[in-house]
Length: 528
Picture (cartoon, rainbow, N blue to C red):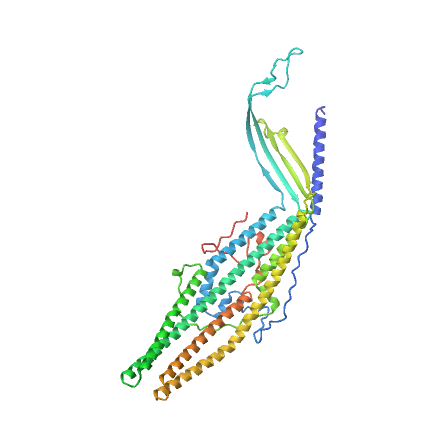
């Protein structure tokens, strides 16, 4: 062995020992990374009634009952409504915006998870440096004198070739990164539930507006028939007046009533156009590209299974979103607690560096360094404690919002159950009132023709019948609206099992496909 070889071997042995120590420390830290100082999440309890107060004789659905699941609007048995509802999921711009929010939340999960893994970077460079002069490395000549009294040598240009590699890995000893990932996952799930809330709201609005149009068509049909009947009455009174059998007052009254109903018939078109424009907006079309042919309301509200109140927690997307937000806030507490503990980072650097391109990638041109680093805040005047208190208060807020959302859901279900129960009885009584008004008109007409009663009694009976018939149509429209709102209050055809799991989110999958801003289904994003 040559004499100059021993120091090199000792240096290499020391380097290997240093690297082994660093690896051992890293392994120890990895074993300790199972620690998590954050609180364990449990769904906040909420008082749930055993049954709905207003359920009455409504059918209680079994878990396998699919009457209001999936495309819930098909329960109304209207093919035209079904076709419009299918367009909502494709072209509604509010759904498109909510879908984009979900994609953004899903991307944040990828960003958070990236912190669990080491990061590596490189920044190769070739640098040319020109110096006007350089300090002489030595001098020669007789004692007390120098061959170069200025101590300078001639100027020159120097090159430096560097190919560095840097790597770092922040060890998640206390669960800060893992809790951050959990928070991002929960936020993405809440965003997915928000998307379903927007979708359900749009679908319900379309159904309500559609039935409102059909109710206006029924009103228009009724008023058109009434205008024809009143026109016939006016013609008869005019003929009777011309024959001297009736007074001018009777003709004037018949003309006034006819004009009034014609004005009402014309007014129907305003509200119908507004409902039609509203549906066009919901399906993402300009008003001129959407129209519905007149068709009177003849749908019968389906029997909506109210199920058990406890199932509402899983079926309403707004409740699911509030619950996932609560889980997100709980994970943020863990992130805030982890800030009280040291941060350990394992760093490594290496590469090649030379002043000659020919020797750039040779073994002697290598350089490297590796070792852990620890960072800990010694004094922050209570900043971290303030962040922790803020996280805890935010969690308390989400608990309150969650409970309020659940209570609101119960109230909405009860409201619509009560409305449907009362409306069913009111419609039966109103139908009886219509029959009575029709009988009264027949009697008043007969009595007028035989000269017992004045024509004013006929006009009063006609107005009473028209008012009762219009009220009956309004009640049926209200019944259809409350049926849709009950289905919406029960969560439509959705349940919490459709929320994307953490694996779905990491894989870029979602339970419900989003829509593109232009209306077509959005292409699935490529996974890096």
